[in-house]
Image (cartoon, rainbow, N blue to C red; front, side):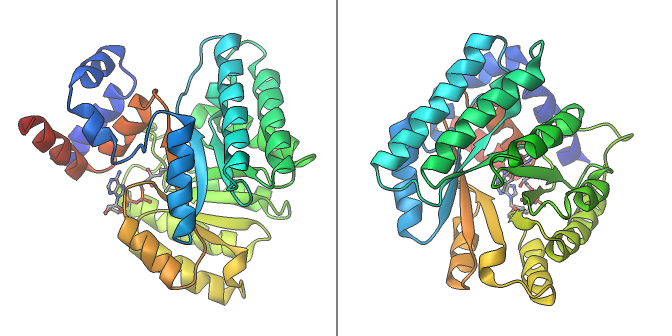
Length: 311
Ligand code: FDA
């Protein structure tokens, strides 16, 4: 119960400007953030990519930032992705890399936001395709799901490798998997990082986990390319057996994990011959991302507080 309350508080803090100023001003915060965010610059992201690729992992890179407030902000985010793609190419590690975008950072919530975000994402998808990279559209809170899936479908007409994310805490997700079957889309499956109302989302962890297992089976049996994004070893075991049952070879699905969360489990997947992709977030706007990582695992808060105490 305590960890549930803490998680709720952290989720609220992730959207609070006052909490943001407080957390950002702790001198020690940066050190703790480093565990989850390898740096603030494009060069830092490329450096982290080199290291991961050298150890047999693929990457998906996220330029941190969400909820832009104006067109200039959305264009700046688009440009940051284009700069990143060019830098990956210059470093010789573009082929096979993926970038993860938040449509809220591309202007989705602005007036006429669907068109703006679609155009920005299409420009990035075009630049990515020319370099042998792919694009995945992160999923944000439940109010954005219809729009984000529709934009994914629209982009796939030109760039078939554009991927979407489905969250198993949402009650609608089994229906969304059924709708996407037949599209051949790259689909990342996650448990869901946003606190959602009971009307649309399962509230108990055990229910979300069961829904995740069923979704693994459904995705493996579909014609989509499953990207099983979790740090939960039980779910990874389930994915391995569901892939075998569906007759999928190791090149027809992949596992994904967030940078810094469970490197030893990443290594185990690589050693067992599975495709493993690591999600690398970088940039100055790390607050929302960092707070969601604390909220989903209260032990991380203890880690954070210990670092504060030892400063
Ligand atoms: P679960 O929360 O059950 O954790 C299982 C185990 O993993 C824990 O016991 C712990 O050992 C470890 N662990 C999990 N989280 C940890 C943390 N923060 N720090 C340390 N250890 C931790 N969500 C979303 O809503 N939209 C999205 O687009 C994405 N995108 C995305 C991409 C990728 C590659 C990943 C891996 C995850 C996401 N997520 C996401 C986040 C996802 O919804 C979810 O919040 C986290 O992955 C945590 O859930 P797990 O599946 O890892 O299981």
